[in-house]
Picture 1 (cartoon, rainbow, N blue to C red):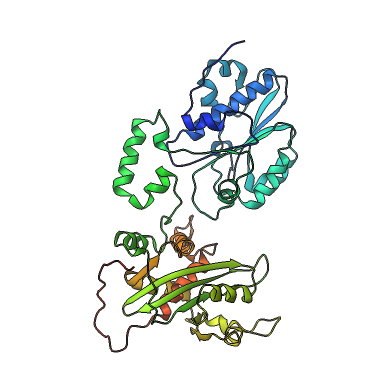
Picture 2: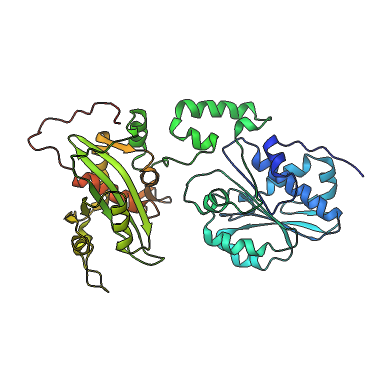
Length: 430
């Protein structure tokens, strides 16, 4: 029997040690995870083929319009780096397969090919690379198709959002027995000097994105996001941290209203106090598909039963089925309510401009408003790439929290009699 020595980063050795249904690695750029997983797919294929098993290794990504967007080249490079693998596999321009005919690689994009993946025979291993954007629907459909005895599912990705389906499934609630590792550039003993210079450049010139790119942290601001620079300035000035409420000031619950049912828009609420020239954002709540009673219960449970509820203009509109509006229902529940008038054409951009203008006066409780900060950090413009024009705010998971945040600024009023230009003083609030 011939023995081969395979070199991998230490953290990946642990991931591939022993049997497991799931093997998962996440982290930033330069960690060696993609190259390591590519090599190990070929080794597992070699082991299966040598043991007389037949089947395929499926390499998938959420988006893959052609083989140029697949892991094919990584697979080829990994095979060529090991003489025994190079001897076992046949490599063509658009294929990789074992010379004994037992093992073959296939490549697929999950977004448009889930149904065809179901029909693939004898999938021994599925490796999903760049798995961050894979939807929950895709995971629910994909995983049951990998059903051969002893089959495995491997996942590699750079985290972006705490509420992504991949994070929820494999980090927040990992499967029993999964082997999981966080791996970053410092864990790669072969981290190349050319990437070290890139890392240093990002640390110096793009500090807002460095932690995500190199350290595997979640994205805090998206490139081109409406509030990216404002959030960066708030962090630098110490306005994101621990913020205390003023017991003498009114709590405001600023809403973006949702609906009930699985497909309804999310309901978002920012708990805010306007204290002199400061806007203190103290808490954030978001729920999808829940009745109004659930939102009211959260407010009462958290001590906001006396809050002034600030609603967008459609808060006064009656529900078509129950003939009741958010405004009337909240008043019936004992809350004072303020409805902001319709701002007309371009209302979304008016809210954005108001929030940008007042951002230097805003203080965020980092722990309690973290999901809201994620939302406004992600909130960005939808663009027509072919024509290079903006199409207004992108309506996605972040837009409800961002719309309520914009309403915080619209509803703000300067203290009466204060007509002087506002000067914001940097200090900590405890």
